[in-house]
View 1: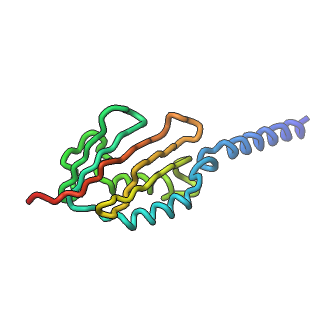
View 2: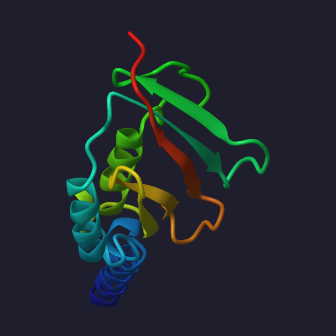
View 3: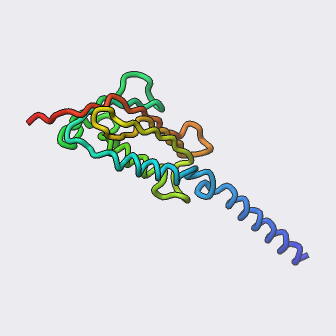
Length: 158
């Protein structure tokens, strides 16, 4: 009787451990294809050097479908900080991609990223033009989706 009780207890313990391991978010469905993201990022970022003065517009497809958010950068600083304080410059988008898509992989990171880079025809600079990051593989609403357009390199006013 005592031996059967211990066997049942031990079996229950093993099942709970295996079940926990099988459904641990950090152990599965994160960092899909992260090595490719890292290679693409390095190639693109090597062709990006933030100009002193430039502007661009971005849209947050996860939240709003209206007007884009215009950013004007002068001497490396965004003239208008709101909205989206974390996304002021193109460099901030590069930081977001690095952090979410491959920095702590293969164990921690977004479950899926889809990044498209564009080369500006005039300057030759490469920037992320489409950024899609899904954090939780089980929650289809947990994602960021940005579209960046109208990159314009400007001369700085003194």
